[in-house]
Image 1: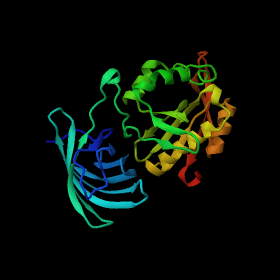
Image 2: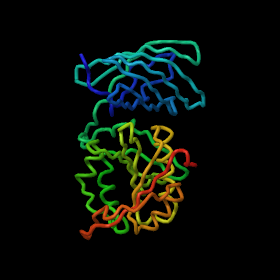
Image 3: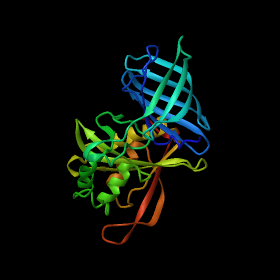
Image 4: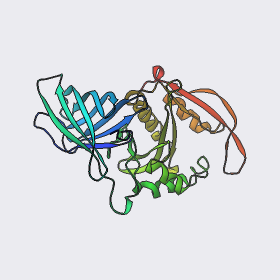
Length: 300
């Protein structure tokens, strides 16, 4: 039986093993492309950050993994998994693994995380991110947007000082992004626990044109404090170091000199004017500026 793609699915360990580092609090966020290439990020419990990469043939996975524990130790190994279906329709994987960085081997089972419950059950975990997995900048923290963030995001993007550059961003559109119906991956920008902005990225999956793009907004009362630059540097680092992109683009309005200066601080360079690229809130077409940043030029 051929099971669905693992792309966007989040799994957690259902059978922690004494010789393993992974526990019930560890979440694996999977990606899979049309060519059977599989990769995932994982964290939680004793795992500070981990990655795995491999291949899928039918319902069998073969991959290698490496991670950093909260105590500062690194570990690596090899795993073979078989995808199975649970009675409630979720997926699970029977795993046989062996350390390559130290002695030991074992078996385990990971199960797809159940959907959210309660008033926000309609909002799924954002594809490609484990629940609670955050990106830490120098001052700000980027957190995957959840259903409970929708009202705040809509309010932020519709407020004076922001809405002029984000016209027409409806609640339905934001809800779609949070549910994973949109190509954009939404994050809230937090400063000491307070939401101060919003950032999203999207990916071009075609191997011959692969790159990522960004959009960012900072609440008016928090602009001019360097928070946007910090958020962009943090997200660009994730796109390059974690997701393997060699090029990142951003496309501010050509007359948004404040944003352009901020993007240049991150390392983005102007590519060219895109004439009548975007329709503004006044109904007229405005020029945009395409800017890009290559991984070889990025200095975090």
